[in-house]
Image 1 (cartoon, rainbow, N blue to C red):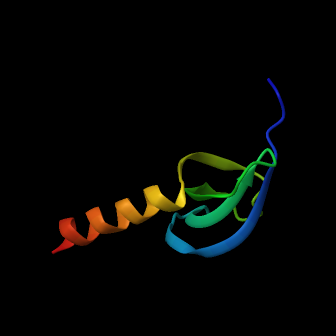
Image 2: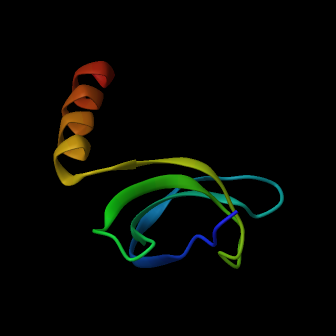
Length: 73
């Protein structure tokens, strides 16, 4: 399995935290040196381990924001 590299360019905040200190975070992440994407996933406190997550381009994140506005009203 090839190594996966990541660089957290900007941390926007945590959505939630579990008892073990893992946090679901929204970050701007460059995966394997590629164009950064918005990334929502669980992270260990030291950011050495991560759970499964989902990434969004700027356009996809904008669409999601609009859908959430509609859903929450």
